[in-house]
Image (cartoon, rainbow, N blue to C red):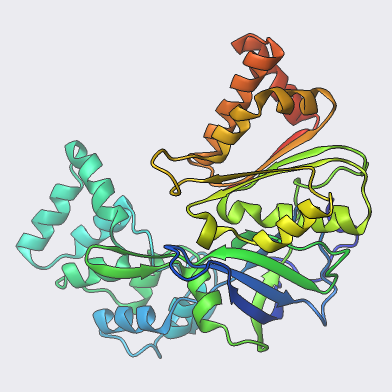
Length: 386
């Protein structure tokens, strides 16, 4: 349920919030860096509901911006007009706050090819644009950001205005909220995987995740945030049973759901599926969930550790193991929720659901498709995937 009163703060007018907590959730030895962030919305009229997301506007890092300025032979003080606007600002500010320095496209390569002064560089760029090279060009682009193109094709020269003209807006990132407003009315908790990796022999980092983890000082009112409308949330009737599938950072909204169900003494049964790599290092909020299980606030808790045994085990495998019981819950009116990775996990979970409906509900493949289509329409199958 979205907050009833509309806030004065939105995507076009974000609130400058304070980050008050930045804690690592993974234990020593984990391959991952997942953080628990607490964002204070004190001083604003922002409100949120379980299932909502927080929109965060990040900044590009000073190192990335400085590298682009060096490659452009620019000081950063040059005035530029932002694409599709009439806003004139300093180049350094535009590259830091307003424009994305990642994800060049085929169109970017066309512009570079037109401007290349060196014959070998022009030939390489034109070759990348040949139709028969689409696959290798897609791979080439996926491993590069604009700084790579500027450094690999130094004969390509841009005026500051021409360069910013080819960039897209730096968009806000949406993170599922991991707290209940009933328990934390003026705080918003987030569960964020800090993204760091290497491509094309260069260290890369997630713009927003490393902005939060590395560059936002605690308690400074500098974090631009807003709460967009959401269609993901708890049932109004607290007696409704719920099944929650949230591996990795997909656990965020379900921590919020459970906080709220406990606080409001909701009588509906709660079934939680969580998974990650290792039980010893990657059980996010594990102590909280185990305590809830002990106190009978979680009726069923299924955990999938993909790297703790020879054969990988995922949440969808645990669902199939308990297929008969899951079908009983669905037949009894349970709402099914899934949050997390859209590319693989959510598809695998959906396939497991159809398998359960066919094996334990006796539905044909066609009928199971119709069944879950209706469940979605009735808001009994909700997805928050990204």
